[in-house]
Image 1 (cartoon, rainbow, N blue to C red):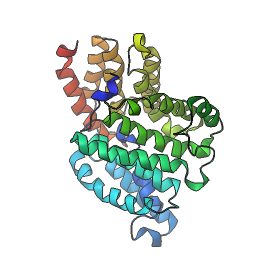
Image 2: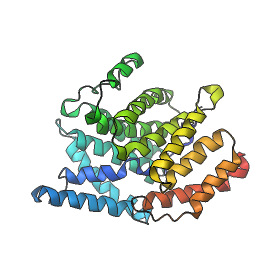
Image 3: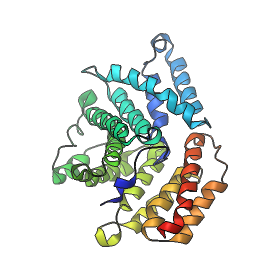
Image 4: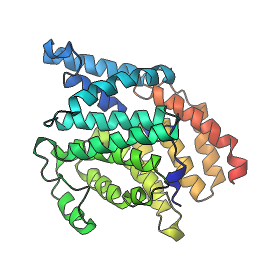
Length: 302
């Protein structure tokens, strides 16, 4: 069974918030709070950016987890519109995914919330005209590659939202072979995103590719050395300040190849680091919790 099945929900920085920062910013910048529509655009943008920054710099994950459901309800009301924009649907996909896999411990509830994330991500592909990415979730693999080749930078945001929602769904449905069969499709989209996505998303894309390439050992079709390359690139792009990348690197690559020395070195780096880094504090604290758990189980694993 591919190891995505073990990545269940709970306080787990599978990736720093699954785009949580941009999800919240999209909610607010789109004018989704009652007073936001009457603000000047610059004021609304500043408010969105400030709130997003405050959340990511929060050192109490439980406070954030308790607050996010209100935003999910706001997004649901806007996403229900037949003409909902790609920004709205993408924000819904990212925020549902982040909440489902980072803050919800009950597996059934997490799976249900992740299904909402996937559905919003699929709808985002067809919003605002949707060409050329509308319907890629249903295309045969050969046609998918051809169609992705037509996607440009304007499509990057909805493609990443689709990836985030889909990975949350796959992660919470690890026993569902139909869900796992979508992994090659998601990897193809990520490979295209390496080419067309903006610099701010590059570390996220590289981390996801690192995870996907280390789901299976080489003997079963995995590409762990390629995965290691992606993890190293993500660390370079974040200046090693995103501790969640180090955790994914240890859990994905080091455990897969049974490299105890690398595993412990990466996780001890996480524990020794100052988690309070601008833009990373919230998920760095979660990463340290995960690192402690992985180190505690290392003797049994190795």
